Length: 547
Image (cartoon, rainbow, N blue to C red; front, side, top):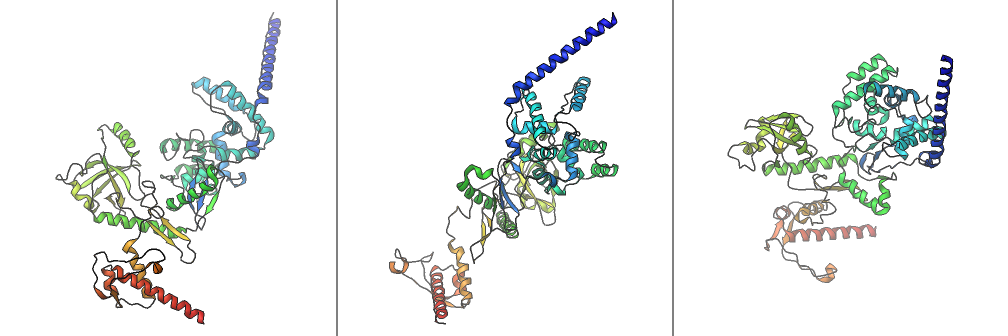
């Protein structure tokens, strides 16, 4: 009886297995012909952004939806590869596209704990990222499995891993680990250490949740998990694990991957490239070298900002930029601050801050990164009137006020403000006209109007010192006497219409020294100086010709 029952059970199991095999074969025959070709993988052409570089090759700007830096698998450091395998697919080099051991382990875990644990391999992720959507359907999952087998049959393991390393999304518009290393840590992929590799390797699972800039605590938890997995797999030693766990992780809080403030230069180049290549300029990996030198650009940016801020401070403090309502409950306060900072961004060394407590002797503020700082002493002098009880309500620094803070020369916090004035600076090489630095305004993010190329304003009397300095080079001296008297130029002299220059006040004072004429900004003296410089140059040319 038992034997008969066992035979019956075996026949049933065999029948079920046969039906299952036939069903799988049917699905395979039905879906496999509909799978896409692998040209996107074998002829990999990622969307590489437009990159604008300085004369020395420093990055000045980058345009494109995807921040990407394509690397060959041999350029990926061993520690990075090990971290990826530990985090995503430890049996990558053993399975054939689908890891049945991981599938079984995930299924048991899901049944035992009720949680949802995935078992997707790196190959399956490549299939999904290149060809499939993220919809959760059985058909899509079957296509993913079949595509994984097809990819494994046509590409080597290193080729598949190279595609993954370059294509995977890692947050902050970064695609690929090379771009992520630069964006999060400000260094090439080849220079990262064990702790940084573990942090990057933990991002693919959930780039937003484990973003070290937006969610440092969750990113840290994920990093420690990856480090433990690397240790369990013997990818790192006990000492390396301890060192990586204790290592302070320096993440760039401001996601800025350029090496100089050259936003106006980059925008000028972007417009030129778009006029030539259209939308393709953002995806075909064009690299544009400019004549701008980083050292000159840095100096120009710093000088322009310093000049505008100093000018603005001489005109006094105008009051907070705005006021926000701050609840007393700590949990609600944090949410209110996060919401408020969405409307107020930092401007380089002028950080946005919200006042949480204020008195004539101390102001406590919260910066956009969540840090609370106290400002007192000399740091309050600039805005002292706004801290008085007699200050108008619209100008008073009080709880909820949005202000600007910066560090002084000694590193101490002080109250500042965003200037109302604008400025620009451009420097060029006289011999060939090459632009060495260009700053079109105080803050590109606040005002993208380029005051160098778009303002089209005459320099007016600000140009006179250049004329007088040229005259000094030609033999004039500050004591040289020039006549301040009326002048008239007919059409033959001007080449167009007659011109009769006048002084601003309409008065003429006769002969005067050059220093006096510059001090009084005399137009007629300046015109005569220009005439004299021209005559001297003409005479010099004739003299050279006679030689």
